[in-house]
Length: 308
Image 1 (cartoon, rainbow, N blue to C red):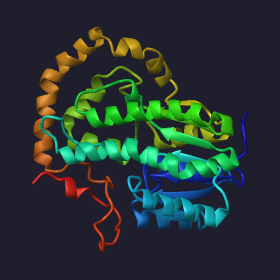
Image 2 (image 1 turned 90 degrees about the horizontal axis):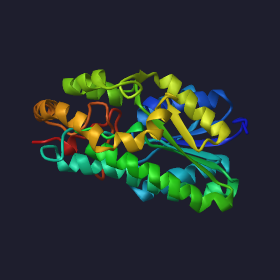
Image 3 (image 1 turned 120 degrees about the horizontal axis):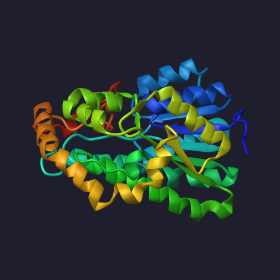
Image 4 (image 1 turned 90 degrees about the vertical axis):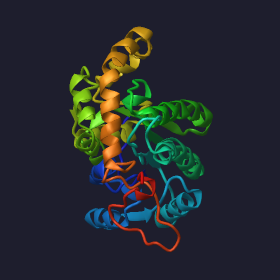
């Protein structure tokens, strides 16, 4: 059943850019009162102004006090929360053997623990409104690639988090969905292609839909449709559903052998490219809050995790 978003309060994490930003624009265009949450206050403020003064709050989803303040601010501004898009996510650079371990761990903290903290912060309000939580997982939830260990692990965890949480809150009338986009044309994906030519080559070799890139606008449309229809699963593009249903074969020994053959050359090349970067994240990744006393700034880079 499709519901109107008019007057609905929709909180979106990772709203400063990419999928979160475009989802906020489209949800607002369909009448929602959007609440923008993220690490880049200048971008959030500019987007809020564009959306007729939408509420916005700087927030690190791995910090519970920060999340609580954002959620409390949203409720103070609008009186309730009807839907949440747990979208904040990052992707580190490098392998487990050679990458910056702090960047690898940070990826899991943001992508998985950040979703759990977000769900805990908003759930009392979603129970009160019999609302909807859309958790952004990935096609990587069920299709693993070498060089993406923390990302794949966190997104697989996020999918099962959503599956279990859906059962846990169903009796409250709360619906939970998981979204599984493939590669979306965002800063995160473009940065990875710029940083690692081997990544760009890997995408070229993958069969569709795993090797194709979808526009961020098309992804946002799928997310907003999910908010209106309270979908259980969202695939972007829709053909990712085929990959989902073939996940047993994709995880088979036969499929692994094909990937291993390519990884013999692509992984060492990627490791060398990451070493030359001397940083654990893409240049547009806002992966941390500043140390106490350090003001938040736009385009916050995860230099704490750059290799020295």
